Amino acid sequence: MQNGTDLYALDIGEASFTKACGGPCTEGCVTLARIGADAWALGDSKRPDVEPLRFTTKELDAAGIDPARFGLGA
Image (tube, rainbow, N blue to C red; front, side, top):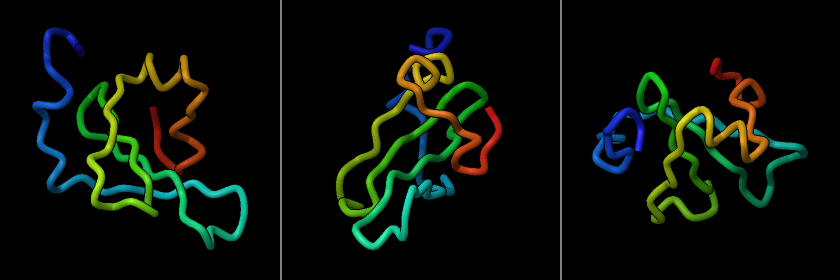
């Protein structure tokens, strides 16, 4: 939980997801969107029907995911 807020209660309907690719992205890519001041949604462009997972900035960092790789600031 993020400061007592359930990350999955945050609306991501208007979230703008960005891809980060290590190559030509022909098979799909991981997508990331900022959904709050300290909240992120991580998706899979190959499976757009699957709800993105949600993380705090601290959790992304612990997982080795850098928003800068997606052109996003932390």
